[in-house]
Amino acid sequence: MSPVSKDSVLQQFRDRYGYQATGVWSAPGRVNLIGEHTDYNSGLCLPVALEQRTLVAVAIRDDQAVRIHSRQSDATYVGTVGEIGEDWAAYPTAVLWSLAREGMTVGGLDLVIDSSVPVGAGLSSSAALTCSVALAVNDLHGSIFTRNHLAAVCIRAENDGVGAPTGGMDQTIALFAEPSTALLLDCRDGTIEHIPFALRDAGFELMVIDTRVKHSLADGQYGLRRTQCVDAATTLGITSLREATAEQAESLSDPILRARTRHVVTEINRTALAAKLLRTSRIDRIGELFNLSHASLRDDFEVSCEELDLAVTAARLGGAVGARMTGGGFGGSAIALIPAGKSADVTESIRGAFAARTWLPPHFLNVAPGGAATLI
Image (cartoon, rainbow, N blue to C red; front, side, top):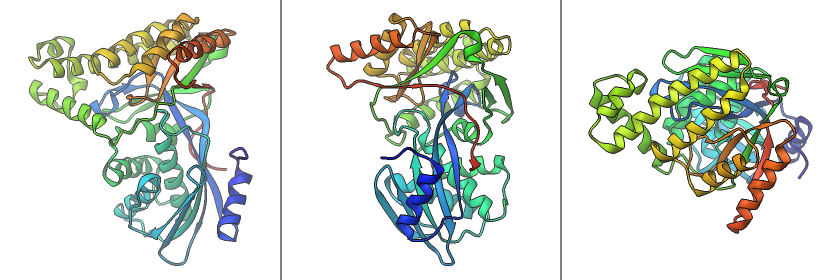
């Protein structure tokens, strides 16, 4: 397959539909440095946009027909405005449904999707898709909605349209990222802060380790964790676990709710400290926070898996100063903070550990913080 590019997706559109697309929009995948499962608890998270992006070529039709082709699945969805498709087509069609519910008069469209964001790797391929489609349709309808409004549209599309609960971090970073920065998001009030993330200047590299274990946030486990957090907050008599203290977490009699709350409380504190370290260019100290975060996600929130645990352990043995799972969990990716020039050692350590288990080798991505969704 040819590389993902504006020219290639325009050519795919011409080949598929026989005419020229109006334009091409793109949105990034993301990796979350720290702050996992805190967004839906009104907490803090610290994501970074990736260079890997989803591109959509779009043209408005003069009827209510919707045709969407995905290069990744080599399939074409055909329906009408207001219908929500199945599988991969659920995401772009749910965006149209969500925009209509917000008051936009949405017409038919032809759309081609191409992406370099790995699917099922915990790198927010779904938000890259929904945000690129939402921005495209909004632009083609006169930019009715602000980016804040579009983030809410995309959250509703995934939560209510697809049935895959998300807390809002993925959509926010996709629509508001800036190159060479991390984005501190306060999910209680929606405020954001762009913090310089100068890895090379500090002598470090950030590696994404895609375990190639596919996961689905619609399989019930992610939703169960959200329910458990709501139950814990209700038991404590607070609005969200953002308000909980360490003492309150330990006061819960239910051991599962106690563990879930302990993770959220400590993870929010780790995220605040990570942001403080970035502001003062002390990237080297973030590694230990990665390690503590992974232990909490593995033991208290129970969203890791054998492959993620092995990737994290092998990364540290190979020379990483810190590593942890990232994303919703139950598979997907880990990240490792690595001294410059040591990536090959870390990669060899992880590949060897996976080979010893006769597992498929992971995929590796080096992170260079990218920008937000845009017309290209």
